[in-house]
View (cartoon, rainbow, N blue to C red):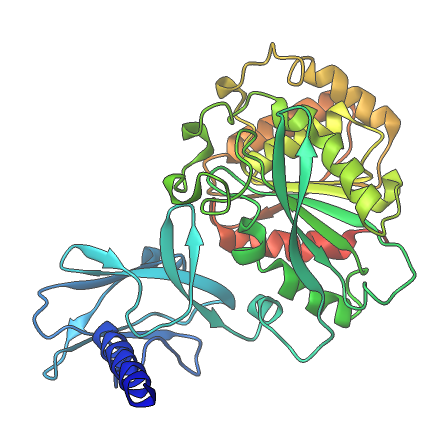
Length: 390
């Protein structure tokens, strides 16, 4: 019996080993990407039978497109110009097949696409990486929304030593854009690393950061709901009953009340901030205007304020000028607006600021270069978070 058992175990192990080997764990001798001393990046792809290899990323130089040249050894290569410090994402196109860099194990998801990523240091990207400093905790939790009759998931950052501390903390509510979910700011925005590093340097106050799911008819990110893998990442306008219907904005106090009841917060207006990118910027605009006594700090990042696509007769969206005037009278510590000068929403944000000027709502405007992309939004968070709760 012992002999039979040992034979079965050995056979099973052999099958497991063969299955493992069949996946192909052999590492390539090609190194890619390589950040050079001048902050350029070299990409290399081993594809001896390919006819064309192109890399496309979110850096500005050469419009983020590089055509790799084939060497005699079948390895294709391309080097960018020197790049500013940032976390860059990119994909590789080999004969029309687009995918991640086959020798780069580091990747992230944006909406429904997977991108390889790389850091160029000596600048803002230093804050997007793990350093030897005290670390906070990134976790997920669920709350019930009576407004949409769903249990919904939040991603929450608590600062270093939160669990051991007797103190209470201010809260930043950070909202994602269309196609995002409660994981977007954590993964693409590098929230935990930014907050850990800023807090360690004394540049930001220790704070809780709450990242909700802004798709009102969905419980959580794809793969994390009872729909499991049948719910795939989509832009929010393609998700039924989720886009610009006012439900999320109207129900937002449910999130604030849940966080105040569950976490060690300071439940006061001047200890709460609300900020969002793109669609989340639109959410931020209407949530803060509808509940003017709830948030003392407001941030709009490339806000999706194209009102031609909004039913402005819905109660949550109606009488915006009157709500902004009331918000101005109620007072706040900071109203911060940021947008890139080539963003497709640039003029919409300019038009919104003109409306604010007419009703007397004061704001601070930050204009950057480039367009509607995470390169800007990470930098906006880096700057905005240092202005909070001082």
